Length: 336
Image (cartoon, rainbow, N blue to C red; front, top):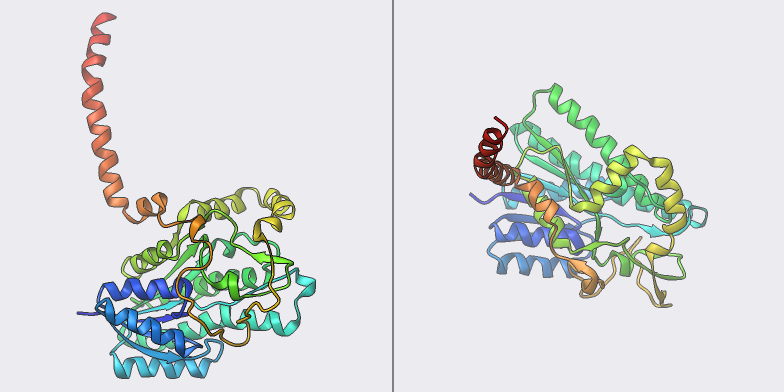
C-alpha cells in the first residue's frame, strides 16, 4: 500500500529531492510551500515517477494554513503516515546588522514552521497511534557558525523541542515515532535567494553534498526507528567536535567562518530574496554548486546499512582468523 507523506518546503532544495525520492516509492504526497509555480512542477515530477501528489500552497509560519493543509491531505489522500518538516529560510549577516523583523521571520519559518507542522501531524497520528515525523536538522543544530545566528538558533530550538515531545510520547506509550536527520552543507537554491548583507555571494561551508544524499537518509529514517541520523562525515565532525572542544571551535570559526561562507563573486544588485515572499523562477532541488558537490557519502551509506556492514566485518574477521591460524600454530611449535 502506498504511504501518505507530507513534505514542507517541497518546491525546492532538499524538500524537492525528498519529494522525488518518496515518489519513486509510489508514495502519495502532500506538497507544501509558498509558491504554486514550483509546487506544480514538483507535482508533475511525482506523477512521472509513479507517485501521486496534491499541491498545497501555504506559509509554514501560519499555523492555521498548515492545519488546513493537513486536513486536505487526509481528505484527498488518506491518513498521513509520514510528515517531513523541511521548510526553512535564513539571512546571512552579522547579528548586529539583522533587524528584529528579519530575525523573527527566519525563526518563524525555520523553527515555528517545524512546530506547527508537528502539531498538525501529531494531532492525527496520536489518534491512530502510528506515524512518523521527520525533522530536517543540521550540523548547525549543535555547532553554530557566524553569520547565521537566526538559522542556527532555530535549528538548535528544533532539537530541544523534539527531545521534549519525544519524552512525552514515550510517557504516553505512543507508537508515533520522532526522528531528526542532521545535514551537512547542501547544494540547494537557498544560497541564491536567501537574504544577505554579505559583500560576496553566499556559499555552503565545504565540503558540499547534493540534496539527494540528504533525501535518501530522510526517506530511510521515515521507516526505521532511529532517534537521530547524521548525514556525512562533516556533520558528525561538527557535532562531536562541539562536545569535545567547543572553545577551539569558537576560535576556529571566528578566524575561518566568514571567508568559508562567501565566494569571490560580488552579490548582484538584482539578487532575489525569499525571506518574506516566495521567489519566482525555475529553481529545483540543486543550487549553483553542482561542480563542487558530492552525490555520495560512504559514511552515511554504512550508517544506514549497519547490518550489512556488521556482517561484512564479521566475515572479514572470520576469514582473517582462518588465514592466521596456521601461522600461529607454526609459531607455537617453533617455540616448543
